[in-house]
Length: 93
Image 1: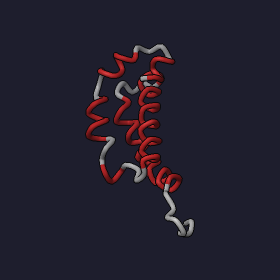
Image 2: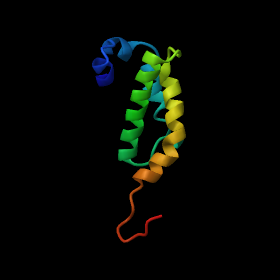
Image 3: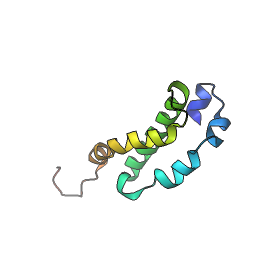
Image 4: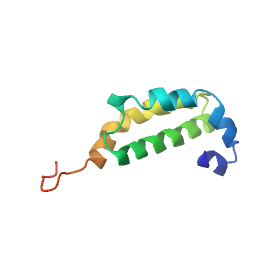
């Protein structure tokens, strides 16, 4: 919502239009394809939001939520590797 406000693109319209709630509640929270750590989930959610806005505003695809989630699902292994918590006294992978 902040990004759409900065781009002057009617944030309330983008919040309630399309399948945003469907994607946020059912698709983005799919257990096997979400990051393992809280910091990773924050990165995942931010990435989904930014990609959704960019796809809706600048892409030819009218519903960017599902496409943004699919793109971020491809990045989840890298997010997990980046945000993995090392146990105290454990070796780094």
